[in-house]
Length: 487
Image 1 (tube, one colour):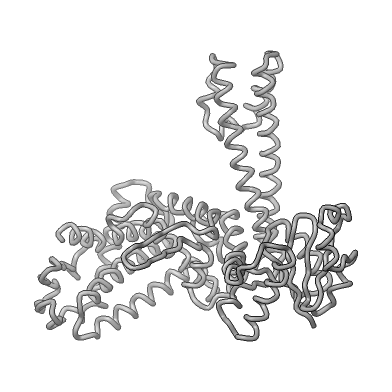
Image 2 (tube, rainbow, N blue to C red):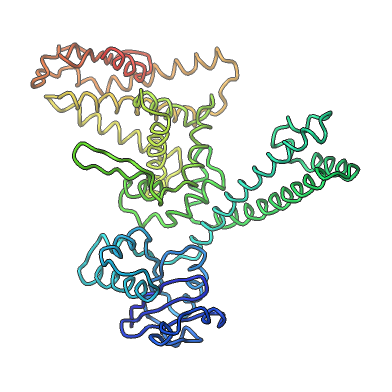
């Protein structure tokens, strides 16, 4: 069995098996543009089976749709198809300082895989992922859907601007996007334009045709995405999460695909979000967005973040708690913290095969265990106290989520609703008091001074007051904001 490095170009691919170079092109005309010297070094093949046998391992360069068609063709010959991470390969290639060339790339792709295998280099091994046609097809559909929606938005904006002066007597230009894109409205505009033969009318007819094509394309793609997502084993679990539609579920599935590939929640969250790179040298620090940042994932999670602000949203307590604990930070930073917490719940649900309600119960049990462990600690320092506050804040949030999920038929009357929440909050705080009863006696805390043997922590020099009243009937998040303002 051979290891074959493959460089993908627009019209052909270059292969290297450790001994010889090969070039394969579906269209022979593409070879005419190649230099004669290059063709003298390699063997031109008309069938991939001349260079690849069943059981061989093929490593392709990450080139999106260019490499996708060749990967699917190679999959019919051998099941061992790997896609190399573009960022990792770029760093490896720069270390060799070689001229950019198809033959060199094919050689270096194979060389990187060989080194990772022989030296047991785990960093390099992570850069090679098995090719999965479903995952890559789903990603392609989602990206196409995003681009089509952007094209639709541009066409709608142009249409509104031109309708403003072609038909000023009508209010087409002040219609919302949803109302404007109704079939009845578009047909009415089209009929009026046919009766108005001007240059502007022709331009408007062109925009109308673009809008119709975009709407048909979006409907077709969404139907296909829904079909693929519903056939995935994790669909039913993710469907139990509030504000998770088919598009959000399909986008998440297209990136992680198989939860068994992740051994920790940190690895799962990092891979799905792929945030910013933090570079530091001395006192200078640079933060920049990476090329691998999952913009489509973040866009959909941001919609979930915005929807969680609604009154009866189960995720509203989580959003409020994240905002409180990150008081003073930018909105984007708060959103990323919210996304981290939400993806943590997703990871636990998928790993343990739990619904949203069950994973909230599991999270509550874990937090209570952590609080019990912390309460048994005799000497708590400043950081332990901060952790205690965070644990209590999230315990409150998950208890509120559980109440909202279990009591969906909440009275629409605002007064009755507030009374209901207040009564349940008293019960939740009584449970917290029972768990945290042992934390009243903290004794002496190192260099931070003496804390009185009361339910209130008292005064800690240089750090302000920590008035965590275990018998309070209020949201503990409110106390945290007050402490920060005091400091």
